[in-house]
Every structure is written in structure tokens, then in C-alpha cells.
Length: 521
Image (cartoon, rainbow, N blue to C red; front, top):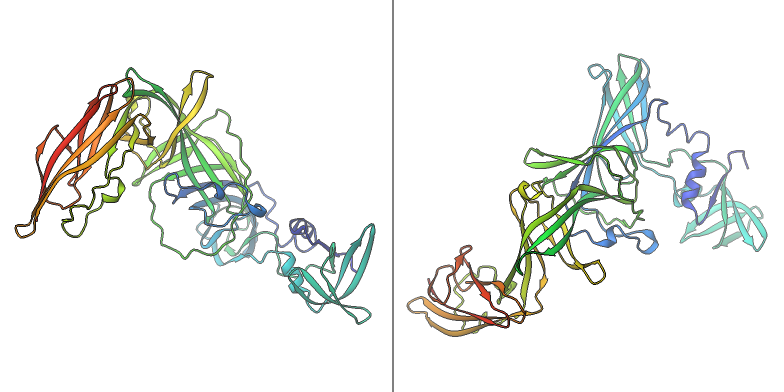
């Protein structure tokens, strides 16, 4: 064997890559210019539905990998120094994201942008691996080591085949041997063309030789962000009000295949359109390293940006590859007033869409759901300590148990992008001591004269020891043309098909809402 013998442990491909990096010739293929370190900035865009990031995307899974696509992307901007010769030079730029979109790469010389231009641009991603080394050495001589206890057997011969982790070797005696278990493989040299990291290569022409400060910009997949809101609820002056402490954190998943050290960070909140692309069948499970919260330092500043909102972190941060990082979005807002809202929707979700014809079947929609939903509502305004545009995300609510002074989880919901001075509605769950009942009392239809009439009675019972306010929500689903001809309580028309009957129910009491609606077509 030569002095450049390459050793590959079967179960340690990553370690093999480290060994390969020390081989003469390989380092030259990846060397960046010996100039000041890169200045990195990234802007992250998220396409995730609010609160829809499943834990398996960032928690360890089988073999430390996960399947699926990270719902977001980022624009990476890196500045580096290079020494360029007169005329044409070749620049190799490694440490780029493995999930890079090569069609988005842009290179510019900040030192001499007018006379420095790119003639050719290449993205090299033929990364070294155990399988590729085996393929390159088919029909060539290699050495395999087998461990038998403390004894190591060395077998040298011509590699005939490698499949399913096994090796077929023709040894020096001419015998064909099948080797399924081995500890090391020794290669005489590193084959040309293999690299250990994705690398961008430019053929650059310049009229100004010497040191150049350059900027490289590209897009990469495999990175996203979302907002998490942590809320603590406290009872207010009555059963229908409360106070909220609202804190917000940004969570970032980086599985782009690169680490961004001491980088400037921007986050874009808003629905930025991208051309749809086919979803590749990646095996994308990657290890997570949960980052500790940052120390109290300059946080995020937000500003309108086109028709979106841009959040800029006031300090550099490091985003390791294969990691989840959390950063405080804004300081906790204290004592934000809120209203507790109970809503009884006896029909439920099934009848919230419009049908293509009048629904004249007497029994259609007579089901009754007893559950009464709980909501918290607050206004995102500066007067109560809020007023910052809120990115879409998951909002979790807890309440203090005075018995042991601990917080207990009471519900969570997802919010969409919410501008300042707009209301935020959080659905927490179902009330235990308040129940409803919906009944069809009367129904008449005349298909010749194109009308029908229905009378609905709704009962809501309060088993608590205090008054409660409940909104009885009715969806007039049978047809678009309707008129309420009789009612026991005033109602509020919410939209073309929805009305609300607000009621207040005494302790251990019952409220009855009865109305008649006439449909015509």
C-alpha cells in the first residue's frame, strides 16, 4: 500500500469523511482563500400552517432521521475575501447548504463590481461516501480487515462486487471470497472527483487583481421558523373576564445542511408566493440539538416590508445544522385584559358550508351537539401592552393552581398572522359545567310555492355557582334567502348565514332561545 492509504470503518462513514479530508489533494479541492472569515446573514421564510409543525420534524426518530419536508426556505448571504489573479481565476466556495437551489446562486465582487464578472458557475455535490468509494474501486485492488476476537485477518484482492453491505473479493490466490462482516476497508488512494462538502465553483474574470471582498447569495430549503405564544390566564373581576400574561418565542429548525455562525437573522411573516415544485421523496429525518434560550440581549425589531412584516434580530446568532433554536420574539406583556366567551354551536362544523340547493328534508340537520366551547378574546393593541404584529403560530394557555403554585395547561389554539389593533380569539376546549341542547320544534315546506319554515329551540343549562354568558350560534344552512319571523331574544347577524343570540344564565339555571326562520327560493 502507498503512503496515502485510505482507511474506512464500515460503521463510521462520517469518521471516514474526516479521514478523507486529511488526504493530500482533497484539501486543495475545498480550500477557501486565507482571508477574513465569512460574514453571514440569512432571511428565513415559513410556509407552515399556524401551529402545524409536528414534533417528528424536530424530535429524534428512528436512526436519528425523519421523513418529510421542512415547510420553509431561506435566502443566505455570505461575504468572504478572495485573492484574485489578473484575468481568469477559479474560486471554490465550500460550506454551502446541502439543500441549496443552485439556480438561485448569485456572485458579486464588492471590491470591483464593474469589471469583475462570472464566466462559469458550477455546483459540485458528488460527496464521498462508503458506497461511492466502493463503486470507484470496482475491479481494483483493496484490502479488507476482519476481526476475530483480538486477532485481525487481512485480505487483499480485487473488488468484484459490493451489494447489501457485503463484499465479493478475488484474493491474491485467485479465490473468490464473499465477505459479509468486516471492520476496516483500506483503499490505496482517494479517487478524483469526490468531495466531503457541497462546493460552489466560479470561473471569474477581473481587471483588478488582488484581494476582493465578495458576496454570495442563494436560496436553500430545509429551514423554517414559527412563533410559539405562551399565555398565563388569571381570573378577572367576574367569571366572564380575565387577565393574560403573553410571551412569544420564535422557533427555528435548521436542517439545510450548513451551520450559520454569528449570523444576522431576519424572519419574514406573511404568505410569500413561490412557484410550486414537485416534492422529492427524501429520507429527511435528522437529529435535533435543542438550543438553550439566548441571554437577555437586543431582541427582534419589526417593521412593515412590502405587504409583509419583517422581524430583524438585533444581535448575531448561530444556527447549527440539524438543530432547533428558540429566541424570544418580544418581552412578556403583563396583565392584558381578556374576555372569556362561551359559545354553543348545536349544529357543529358539518353545516357551515352552503349547499347547492334548498335543503327541504325535514330531518336534515336535526342533530344536537351538547358541547359548549370556551374561547378567550383579547385585542392586540398598544394600550394593553401589545400592539406588535403577531406572526402565525401556536398559542398555549396555562392557569396557576394556587394549591401548589404551579401552572397547569388549559388549552391551545393556532392563530393566523394578526395585525395590531385586531382581536385574537383562542379556542381552549369544552366547558364541563355548561351544556346545550338543540331541538327542531316545527317544520313546514311548500315546494310548489318555494318556501319552507322551521322553528328551532335551544336550551343552555348552567351547572356552575355563578352567572355565565353564552353565545348561542345558529347557522341558517338550509338556503341563502332567509328571514327570522319570530324570536324570543334579540340576535346579531354575523354574516349572510350566521346569527348569534347572546344569553346570560343564572347559577343552576337554564336559558331558552326559540326562533322561527322562513326560507324562500
